[in-house]
Structures are given as C-alpha cells and as structure tokens.
Image (cartoon, rainbow, N blue to C red; front, side, top):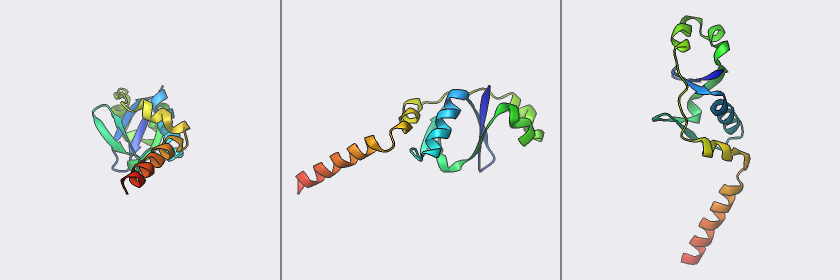
Length: 106
C-alpha cells in the first residue's frame, strides 16, 4: 500500500509506506524542516496530511481516479529521515563544535 502526502496548496504526491512512516515520525518529532521527493524539495510546513491510498477515495472522491494513477516518488532523504530518532543529539554536538570554533577565533 502507498500513502498520499497532501499539501496546503492542494497538491498531492504518492510515497511508499516506508517513506510515509519515516516522514510522519520526523514531522511529529520536529526534526526536519524540509525533505526531497523525486526531483522536488518540499517544506514540512506545507504538509496538510498524510493518508493511506485506500482512504484516498473517502477523502478525495472526485480526485480518486487521478490519485489511483499516481506512482510512488522516490525519496532522496531517507538517511535524514532516519536520523529523527536522535532527538537533537547530533545537532547538539554540531552546535558545541561551532561554539568551540567561535571561541578559538576570539
């Protein structure tokens, strides 16, 4: 089964189960601000909802024929989406390193 990512501007993209789950968790944990799908870059703030394709008819009955013809877009951000499980730890280390460099320059 696939998922439909719906944006506030009413555009829709289809992604694999794996990508949808990682994207949902990364959004819920507020660990990313944007993500790449196929050749496009998308803002997390633009995502309105992520629904499974089976529910698409109930949510978008007039667009179902178009939605049923969509194919999964590949994500280029799976490593970034997988890093959501590190709740800021890697970012904290990066910030400490930046502070160290700034202090050394003074």
